[in-house]
Length: 164
Image (cartoon, rainbow, N blue to C red; front, side):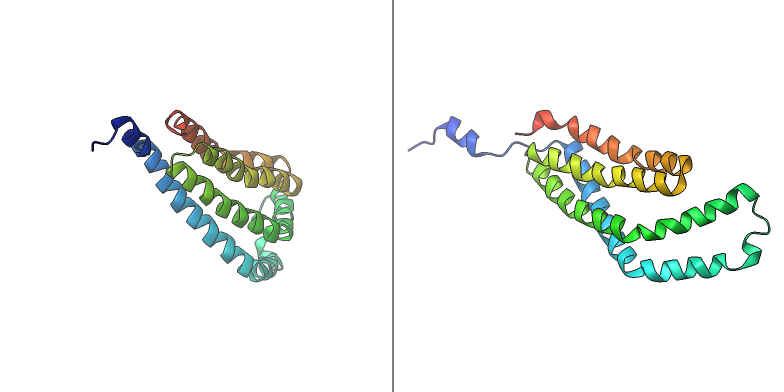
């Protein structure tokens, strides 16, 4: 008995484009770094804050700093209040992001939508937090940080035609 070629071809997986494979591998690595960084930040947020506060108590810290920037030091200190929230959001988003990347690795379009939301949501939170804490400087800094994630969402989007 011979197999029907049309049924055999239905059971085969679509070949994954090399470009998509490279993007997925980069995303796996990037998510690993985000998970590791978030865990370290959750553990070390308290000690980081204590070190920053001790450093800011030193009068020589302000001697050579132009007056407009001394206010920026105090604003940066306010970011420590948000570190746990940002770290938990980044950790959860990275774990969900891994699921989206895995789905795209398996050539599923649904992974792209999971990936897009979980890739951009933490940066939207960062725009809000950094703008509240640092004003226009924080807004510009957080928008600049979105360049690579937005590029990855676009690059994955270019591969949607290959996915089911």
